[in-house]
Image 1 (spheres, rainbow, N blue to C red):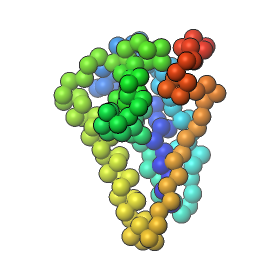
Image 2 (cartoon, one colour):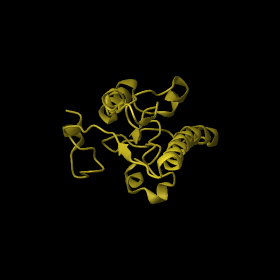
Image 3 (spheres, rainbow, N blue to C red):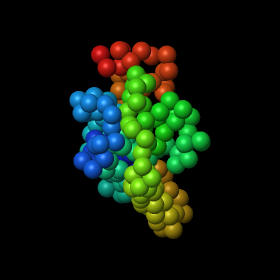
Length: 155
């Protein structure tokens, strides 16, 4: 069994902070809203492996398709690299090619670890159970309820 914990972190390394065009307070608030708090502590089992992504989904969301053309949330600014805040304002400036490459390394590294664990489980037992570990806020994010007003989200 693999416990997949993709959104437990709020960590955005300092070297990436200049990508964001909102205030540090707004970034912190958005980051905290999108984090699956304590899932890295809550989800544990002695006979399972755990794949925990150590970075915020606001930096790179490893549960989005790598190709934004396949990701429905990308049209709202919530692809693998979030580009919009909840109220639709720009979240990030345009990324430079080297920044995209560095973020994709984080994304790809996570998926490579995940694939290795799946292969290991399949080799050892012929089966693999993946438990995707999340927590859920009281208010849905805008890509689940597009009509929701941003004032309600940040109230």
